[in-house]
Image (cartoon, rainbow, N blue to C red; front, side, top):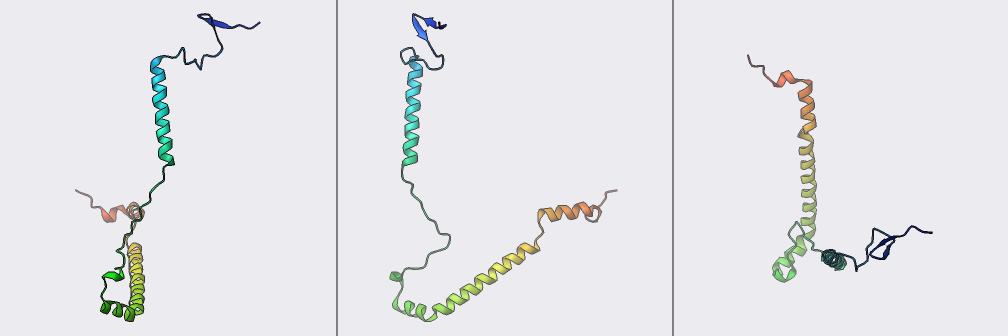
Length: 125
């Protein structure tokens, strides 16, 4: 013998899932809107993504815009210009590394102040 619960002549076997016939109309509307929102999110996730590439440096001028004389000069001096560009890049990176090594960090400043506070502060009389 089972201990069934009867409400309005119907057996209630679970209190978590009510049938759509006994569901409140507002909950039905809310459920439909929620299903539509989930469907929209899924369609947005499935849509193809467009990737935009942004280059920080200006691109080289296309050959269409260059005159014949400029193309000839470029062919003649390309290797020298490329070597000079590489040397300049190397020198610039060395300068920036040296500059970052010279400047003290916040931790170094705090450490120095904690070790020698009286060197940097005057006591007011």
